Length: 364
Image 1 (cartoon, rainbow, N blue to C red):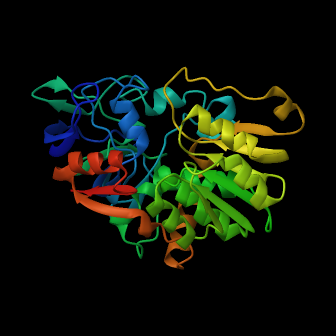
Image 2 (image 1 turned 30 degrees about the horizontal axis):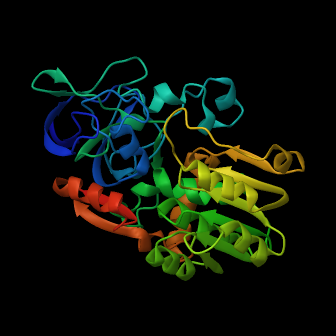
């Protein structure tokens, strides 16, 4: 079938909508009519080849929509189901078998290869291959082929065009708090970077009862939104030293911190702002090979630094729970969102890169 999709043809190139041909889903695949797809920082850094995803490529890995058709072996979903598309894992490596799917030993080949794990592709333009299957979905399109495993059925009462970001960015920020760091009620957390991921972490910290939730961001509008979403304190890092301010606010250092910017100097601040025995979660994306300098004694005396992928999410459990929390009014991530037509995806990307919008969602 012919579909409309946004293609990037070259490194740092524009997203251009055009017609491509899509083959039928395989027995273990699902054809989804896309209702919306979030624009994520990972789409943009892969466009820019921070990670070497082959081009031309259809990106988009925060898709949501309605199942149109399923392969002959699919039992998890059926036509008409509302679904969120998320990351893919192999399901058979040591980490997958331990229940640690976000740390699948084949994570790169499953999500960033620009093809199915076997190297095949479902997309073509003028008989030439277009790389797709980005996170096994490539959802910057009006239709996407996903695998049964990374297709999550959700409550049809929720607005399906809104839910795509739960598949990556929103679940990453919220899951980093709820699943990974697991702060107890009354503890403190400092969140560096109040973009969509950081603000999702703010909402999650408010949900679990953190007594001090400190959002650090240089942009006033984002600090204001953080305060509205549950941050007890906001810090402008351009005015004074944020580590000193956090230490003052927490009486010695935060119990937890999250680094959401991908900047080495900010990670250093996130670690240094911890109390001894505190834990820093790293979720900001930086170019391969980026290094950071840390005080070894600061770690030896009990601090922990750990990377977090996809918020340690069990996809089929955590995403539906976030939908329920949204429907209850307890996780209002819609306050982060601005919608764009798919045909205006390049504008959505430019607005995102300028910081004019927190979470753009493109709708076919």
